[in-house]
Length: 422
Image (cartoon, rainbow, N blue to C red; front, side, top):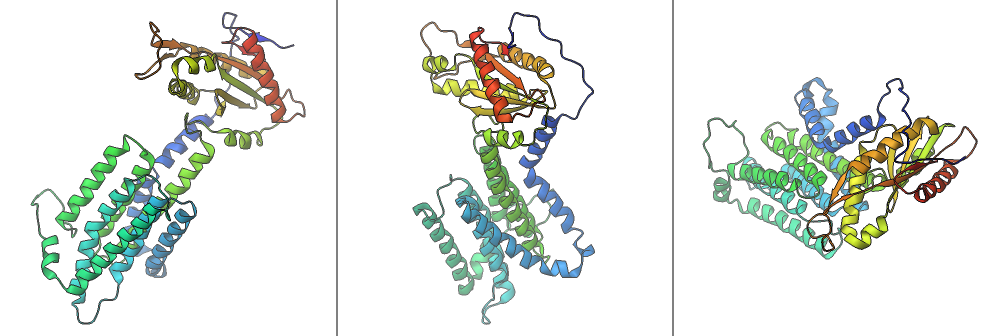
């Protein structure tokens, strides 16, 4: 028989279970680790770099080739995904690495020419990272992309022109010492380039708080890798080794970005419906599925505006991220889904009651700029209705269980909302 657990009824007592590994906490830890991948890669690369002598000579001699392959792979994958910022940064790194080993004409002082190229690239690279990371994605072959190709080409011509001209005075000006701090370690990076690295890093960290934090963290990680490469440039493989590190950071960032877009809901940060479909394929014979719907959401949208409605969904999503007992998903619109693998209806229902009460306790505050009627209270209560069904150890598909949970949700609405029905 269908039944509803109403908000004023007796609350079923949750059975105390043997402590289990919290899958949600583990997945949260994994996602957190993914977000800090740039720093992790740099740490591993730094440790590996100082133990390169212990590695086979055949491997160390192949590092420049490996670096070119990584950067070319990054250029290919960013072009396939049309990620213009990553594409142009990787192209700049690729050309910079070539510039470090380019053949110098016989009539020029090779040592001085290579040193001049190193000085100019040390100055230009952080500025290029800052420039390309400051724009939104605008396409590689668009008009903006064509201007970027021209921008990079002019820089190449500029560097070649300086080297061929043998203008030692300009190189001397760039390498001139500007600061004298006894506490700072000695570095071959010229002071003017150090300023460029520091300013770029500060701007990236500042803008990280405002928007696109993940990409800004990625570029900051690449900036650190490039700075380390130029600091140890007297070691032959330092440049290709850490340029490859920067390339890996950007490549992984692009892959992660597409993972987040494919499997996470952009508004709430919860796993999306695609993730739900894949997880349902892994369910065994015993499981429970719940459908959660925000009460009076259409009326709320009409009264206070869609921006306020989005804020409500974010609030619900935040509560559901911290939900224990099942896995939360954004189903679509104002609906959410909960999976309880291995749990029966009786075992899952107490957790759903706790979720319903947790949402009801939250006070939603309308922000400035919301469409607020006269004399309306800015602090509002939000409630949800929940429909739940289980597999009942029968040979029915998860899609059929969802349909049963959806019917139970309608019963919860008919029973006065803000309740759990099965």
